[in-house]
Image 1 (cartoon, rainbow, N blue to C red):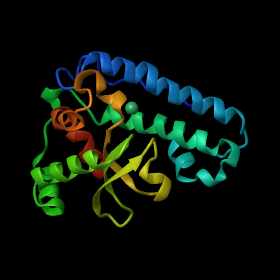
Image 2: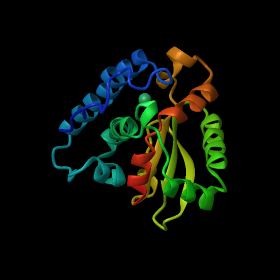
Image 3: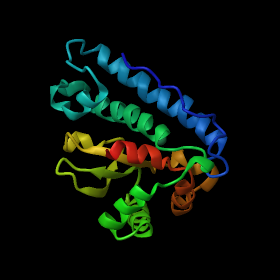
Image 4: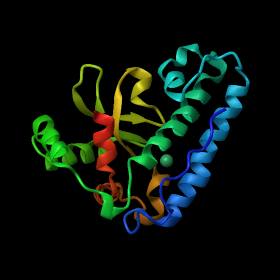
Length: 201
Ligand code: MN
């Protein structure tokens, strides 16, 4: 059985960029629901060798077909949100080190070019999904997006997830309504760059 991780800050910590009400609903309702449905589905398959959520999502073929989609969607939702909370921080803590600036310069041309490409991917993702900065198993940095609650590790185990952005409407609708690009613009103010750097190491 998996459990809900503690939110590393208060619901209003990301104001004014992410509002407290969105954070509270997102964490206590949406994340909780993914977790509950995942645990319920896993009860039906007690013999899984799912020692970790990463192990489970990286090898969905071991999950019996009748619960595989449920585990994929809710296990993905459980895992993605767990990462997402830690990839954000209070605006005054959102600072990029010189090392990370260098990384973006080398891999994407500049920090601005990186942000532009990432935001374009967020806008281009039709419907619900996630945008990711990853380090692939060949140690290359890339921006990609996934539909629904899919994780890049489902297709490519060993992919390192450095940064992820939830572009489901439930992540921004209360404050930004249909304006996904405005949400993405604001979100840069609360990115936990220390966490990105830690995950890249
Ligand atoms: Mn979400």
